[in-house]
Amino acid sequence: MPRPAIVLRPEPGLSETLKGLRDRGIEGVAAPLFAIEPVSWDAPDPADFDAILVGSANVFRHGGRALNQIAGLPVHAVGARTAQAARDAGFAVAETGAGGLQALLDRARAPVRFLWLAGEKHVALSSPAGVQVVERIVYRAAPLPLAEDVAAQMAGGAVVLLHSGEAARYFAEECERFGVDRSEVSLAALAPRIASAAGEGWQSVAWAMKPAELALLALAVQMCQ
Image (cartoon, rainbow, N blue to C red):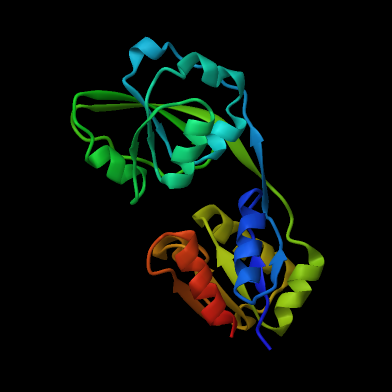
């Protein structure tokens, strides 16, 4: 019998991952550790920028009416999902990346001025010469406690899907709070840096061949068998 696959990501990604697991014969367990919520912010003068840098579709889900003031700026999006969210919100997409925001910055044609719309907690970026980045926080991930029944379920062995470093660190803290035996839990992470954020002592730790949802689903299904 396959081990349960525990999914920690917030909605709407949570339901998508659960469906992906179900389509592959694995019944996932919903255990979101965060709820995404908007943060009050003021849009700067769009004339001061050449483009918008965005690393999550949550920017367009939770950015609110202030987005209307900068809708004329083209978007450089971290990936296809974020790019589609930008288009759905009425923005033109100038570039869709595949290797993270830093890769977008590294290949930017200087001089350029980016307005970076981000979540409250995010990976730091390094700006190449001639590339200016001004940050605005437009949403945050509010932590939720790990459900007691999910913690108990992990005692019999489970595979936990990790989509972010923040989730990995917080999950490890919640396991400590419940006294979960890490040697009974395997981790399937979207990327190596996410896996390392969870610390050590797990039964096994693996990461997807590439940082994409389909690759993570394939890994999780394999680990659940």
